[in-house]
Length: 328
Image: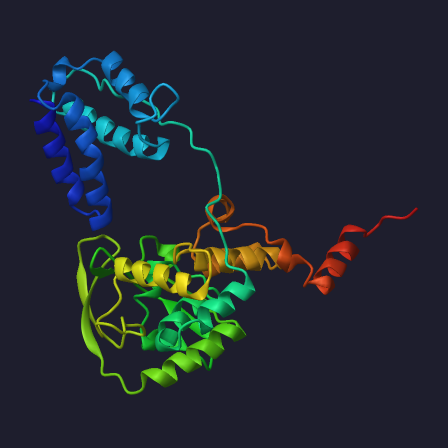
């Protein structure tokens, strides 16, 4: 069996039960393996060659044209999968990629939150697109991912209870259940989000429900839902796609005079402001749909000094709690 045949067989098994985005990522990363070893026989490729491939794949000072460590690790997932299959199928006596470990990744937060004055600028910059501006600014107070935001339906909003249900996401052209069980959740709505949602719902008016297909968590089962989507692209009257929303938001930031960051920075803004205001991290974790604090710590939060001086009562409570039992 050639490496090309092994890669094709492995990709075929991976497409079953995987999301479209995951399958597309594997297919893209597999190209690096094909470029290097495609015509070779799997049994001919040695452990040393695979290790050298790992070392020359990643970007470094001697190899500035290489890929990032994260991308390299994705490629190594393909390598391990192909050579493990070769072992299981008796093509090789052992998996020659078994000791091929991932590159260590630096834990740098990608949070670049919007300040309150920037949120106001985004909201008021272009009256013709105020309904779309309200959508992204409202998310600075809710903390949804971009895919969760554009999949929201009117049925998910309960202003009386001050709650919002997150039940689906829109990824690669399909509605699907959130990728992890913790991401299906009911979150609290804070007052600024409630005010904006009231405006949004009032502007929408009488919307007729439509049928959508929602792929289950197993990426296999499909169910139909009758919903009224909350947000639509005003230029097309169709539901937002991620790419269309990104293009519009970049243009809107230029009009508003706000330094452009991706739409997902609205989610980061929520997390960063909440933690900078000393809100319980357990509440923030639930709002975002994480299972623990690590993802929040690594990716979604950045300390915002501009927020910390607005919580004197909380600082006082922290000072009192920390000083219990201390006397001089």
